[in-house]
Amino acid sequence: MNMTTTKLQDALRSLPTDAKEPIVDLNFVVPCVFEALGFAQGEFYPQYVTGDGSVDYALRKNIDENDNFICTGTQPYLLMELKGRDINIAPDSTGYNSVVKQLKRYLLASNCHSAQWGIITNSIHIQLFRKHGKVVFPVTACLEINPDNVDEVIDSFREKIANPSKALTVAVYNNKGGVGKTTTTVNLASVLHRAGHKKVLVIDLDPNQQDLTNSLDLSLLDGKFYTFLSEKDANLQSCIAKYSINYKNRDVDFFDVIPADKEFAEGDETKFRQYLRIDSLRQKLECIKSDYDYILIDSPPNWRIFSQMAICAADVILIPTKHNNIFSLENAALAIKKFVPEIQRLRGDGGPVPLPVFFNGEKITPFQELEAQKAIDEILRKSKSENPNLRQYFYPKETKVSKNREIFSIPSYANIANAAFARIPAAYRDKTANSYYTELAKEYFLQ
Image (cartoon, rainbow, N blue to C red):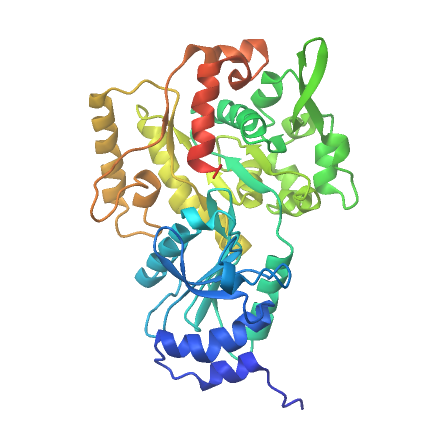
C-alpha cells in the first residue's frame, strides 16, 4: 500500500478545524496551492490593488528575468480571494454569495483587465472562475476538498488555466416568444464583429420558426447539422455558412452561421431524444471553440430538447424581456429559478449562469417603468425564499446603500424591425441601431 503523501494532502491534514484566514494562507495556499498551480516565488502578489479594493493575491507567470511580477505588478492573470475555515463558502450560503460578488468585482476592476481567472477558497471549498471580456462565470462547481481529492482538483484547475477556451458561448433565451431573441442575436453578432473585432459564430437552433436563417437570407440545412450532432465523426464545417454583405461590388464576410436544419423541423421530440442528448451540442462545439471569440445560439421559446441543448451548451444566458409584458418577465424568472438550475445539475460544473435581464425594443415612459417595477417586485416577493435570489438578475445595480433599479433597455426603433425585410441586420444598416446594440455589447460583454 502506497503511504506517500503530497504537500497538499499534508497541509490540509495539518490545518485546524477552525483555522482563520492567515493560517490557511501561510500553511496551505502560499506553500502548496500556488506551487501545485505552477506558480513560483515572485509570481504572486499579495494584497493586489485592483482599482476597486484589494484582492488577497494576484498571480502571473514571469515573462523573463527582467519581468518579475512581484516587482512590476502589471498584467495580472489570475486572482485569488481567500477566507478562513471559520467563513462558510459552501454553495448558496451567505458567505459564498458574498465572496463570489467580491471576486467578480475585483476581476472587473480597472487594474485587472488582463486577468482571465479567479479562485475562491477557504481550504474546505474551492471554485474556479473564468473571465471573458466583462463576463465572469464558473468553470467548476464549488467543490469540497479533502486530502483524498485535493491533488486531483488542483491538477484540474491547472489544466484549465493552462488551456483556456477562446470562445464564450451565449444562449439567447426566454421561454416567452416575441421578445426579440432573433433580433438580439443577429445584431449582437454584428456589433461584436464590427465594434469588438471579434470572430463570431451564430447558430439557429429554432428549427420550427427558422427566423434567424430567413432574416439573413440563408438556405436551410438539409440534415447536415442533425448528422453532425447525432454521429460520432461528422464534420461541422459542412454546416457553416458565411454571412456576407455586398460592399463596393464585392462580398465581405462578417460572421459565420449554422442555419436551421430542415431535418429538425420535420421530426418530433420523441425521435430526436432517441439520437440526441441534452449535452450533444455542448460536446460537439468543443472542437471549434478555439476558432471563435463568441458563439451565439438563437433558442426556441419553449423548454423542449432544442432549448435545453442550447442552454446546456452555453456559458451564459442572455435573457431579453418586455417591460410591458408580464408573461415575458414571469418566463424570465421561470428560466432563472427552474430551467437553468435543471441544466446546472445535469452539467455539475456550476454553469451555465444567467446574465441580468434587459428590456428589448419597446418605448418606456416613467409611468410604465414604475408599473414594470411593481410587476418585478411581485415576482421577487413570491420567490423571496427560493434559490437562486432573483433580485440580482432583475436589479443588478441595486446595492445595500443604493436603490438603483435601472434595467438595461434597447428602445423601440422602426429601422430595427424593418431590417428583416432587407435581410441585413439593422446594426449594419443604421447608425442609431448600431449604437443601441453596441451599448448592449458593452453592457454585457466587451470590457
